Amino acid sequence: MAQSAVQKLTRKKRISDALNLRLAGVQVQDIAAQLGVHRDTIHRDLTKAVDDLGIPGNAMQLRQINALRFENLFHSLEPALQSDDLAIRIGAVGQGVRVVAAQNRLLGLDSPTKTEHTITSTTTVSIEIRALVEQVQANNARARAIIAGKVEPQVAS
Image (cartoon, rainbow, N blue to C red; front, side):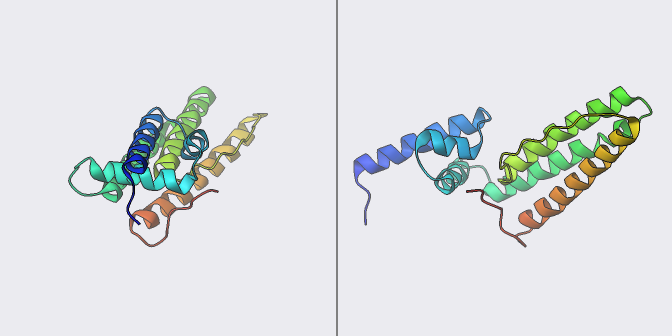
């Protein structure tokens, strides 16, 4: 069934609004809620918008480039994570969390979760750092599998 001119204009406006919100850092599911459509619709619209930009290659290649960039950013934090200075390690963990969050948004793995941590000792910090590193390594492995096309990105409902 062919789309009417009104439907085409409505879709173009939705895509434009979605792209502007995403560039402002709004999560895909929040964009969907704000525009009154399903998350998958916004994901498809954003992917098509990136493809339509005329960038050589496709959205998947752009994701691959950015995923590698995020992985390199995270690995650059490793010396700080090994520091004897607790404040430096805590700062590196914060930076690592932000890098992982950005990478997850890029790959569509950004379902909202709220976690609260309290630091009670250096041993607890070391355990939390190890857990964070393991989580990032698992996310990086999943990201590489998504980029390689071995698994589909998760779509949160």
